[in-house]
View 1 (cartoon, rainbow, N blue to C red):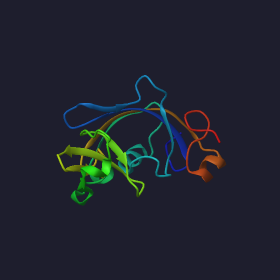
View 2: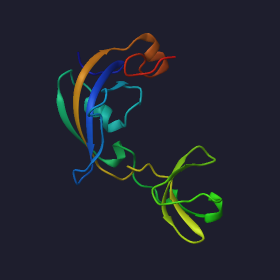
View 3: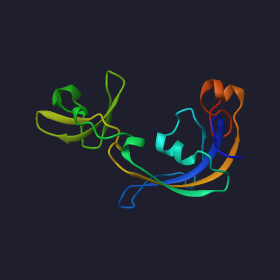
View 4: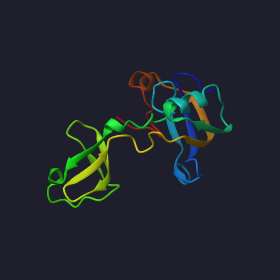
Length: 156
């Protein structure tokens, strides 16, 4: 069976940056189950898996525009140190914004803190090693909800 719209695929993956450093991996965990065609993966990953079958292993090199987007410098801002109250703030810390976004602290000065609202992998070419371990038909409920239920998904 091939991976096409409304199929559930289970994959093992390892994500590396351009230097070969592992950023994320499913090694030692259950495979990632997802509903194909529902926008649950980055576009380049879905495109690369389209038409593939159980048992295939592939390498996907995904450019930022098909991954987490290009870095938007407008999302890098200085905020007053006082906005964080008495909390200790260090580079690398992540905070939720009042608008529902997430920012990462990139620099801490005496009076201001630089935060970046870009996804941490924005502007980064992504290198995935993928093994397809299962492909099955999605249930009507999974299709209507837009995500996987049961094993590897979630229960209502």
